[in-house]
Amino acid sequence: MGDKLLNAFLVGGALCAIGQLLIDKTKLTSARIMVMYVTLGVFLGGLGIYQKLVDIGGAGATVPLMGFGYSLAKGVMKEVDQNGLLGAFTGGIKATAGGITAAIIFGYIASLIAKPQGRR
Image 1 (cartoon, rainbow, N blue to C red):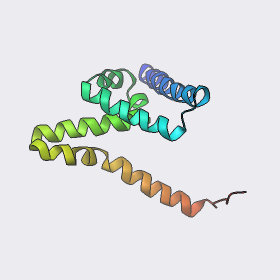
Image 2 (image 1 turned 45 degrees about the vertical axis):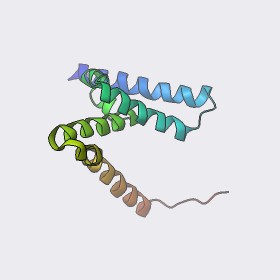
Image 3 (image 1 turned 120 degrees about the vertical axis):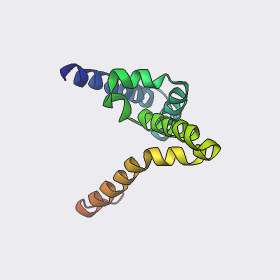
């Protein structure tokens, strides 16, 4: 158990540290870095490379944005195997629907609890 936690911390921390370095040391906006992370997750997931990182880091690899891209790619590949070409359109949505729904619900709950601050 302790090894899994340590590996998740190290892998997730490394992915986030790389993102932070990109924000601090380049002129890339955080939005572009987020898109780059999702795209890289899809690409590495499609090639089967990201699965090795998931095997090592567990949630440390699946929770950050690259993990979202990996989930999209994994869902598409699974649905294409089961349903053919139509799976290319439905697989990503099916694989990530739970996480997206949770983000919407928790975001809504947070908006009810927190008081928004206007721009100054």
